[in-house]
Length: 86
Image (cartoon, rainbow, N blue to C red):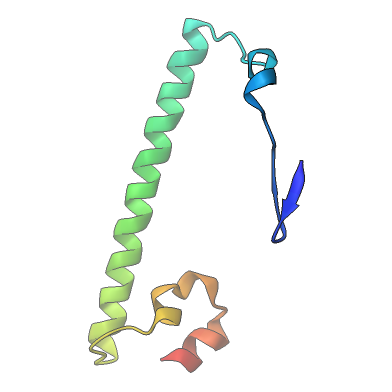
């Protein structure tokens, strides 16, 4: 591994790629992974919908034409910062 601008990346060369461990999955594992993936996608879709609705609510309630970038990422702010950005 090597460090690039503070981020760590695994270094895999094509020479040793054949020895890279790939697990053998049973059909039960594949089904469970598929079901969990569907749940994750569904929850992500739900989160995006709720986030969009919240942003729309803020726009309407505070008579804002366009949210600033900080407010677009409202979930990264604590409550005090959120109020300051309004």
